[in-house]
Length: 147
Image 1: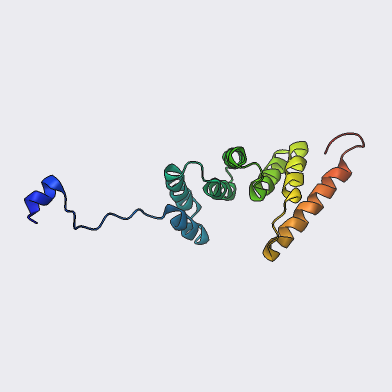
Image 2 (image 1 turned 90 degrees about the horizontal axis):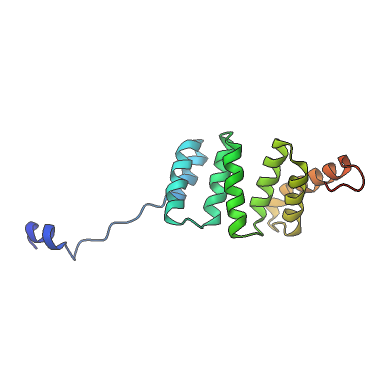
C-alpha cells in the first residue's frame, strides 16, 4: 500500500495502537516511591474506567502517602458509593477519619470493615489492628454514646 493511500485511507494491515496500562504503571511507580507519578498514572487509568473501585482505592492510598488526606477521603467515599462493602475503603477511610478526629464515623467504618474482613493470611495484622483500634475507641466512649 502506498504511503499516500495510507494517509488517506489508513493502513488496514498496520497493527492497532496499544493502550498503555496506566494502572500497572502507577503500581510500579508507587513501588519505586514516586507517588506523584503514580497518582498521574492512576488518574489516567480512572479516566478510562471512571467507576473502577480498585483504581479509586489506589488513588486514595497514594494521596494518603502524600499527606493529601481530604482528597484521599473523597476517593474512598466515592469508591464506597459505587460498592458499599469494600473492606479496604472502609479501613483506609476509618484511619483518615481518626486522623481528622472524627471518632464516631471512624468507628462506623471500622465496624463495616470488620463485618467482612479479608480472609487472606497477609491481612491478619490489619484485621487485628482494626479490632484493637475499635476496642480502644469503644473504651474511650462514655456509656450510651456511639463510638
